[in-house]
Image (tube, rainbow, N blue to C red; front, side):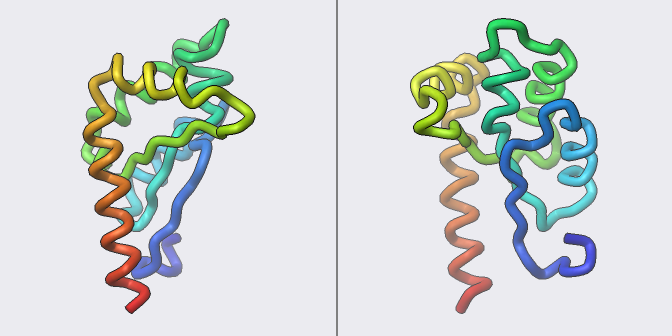
Length: 113
């Protein structure tokens, strides 16, 4: 991503145990977009046994300077989309994540023309 700053990159799943590394990359690279698929489901607040660090990082990211480059991901059909929807609704982030997706679509159309 650093070598191609004019290209858009999407980093899905955003890290699991390495969530800090993914957040650092997204923080410093404006061409990185990411979602927390699987990470929020297996390690975060949707998990039956969440890692506090993961949940804290997701909460931080949703309020960070790079929150306009976060996307909603669910890993459907492997995990229930309803749980993910409820999770982000509880974080008051659904509108932002939807807006981010539309912004990414617009950017993709501009860059590919």
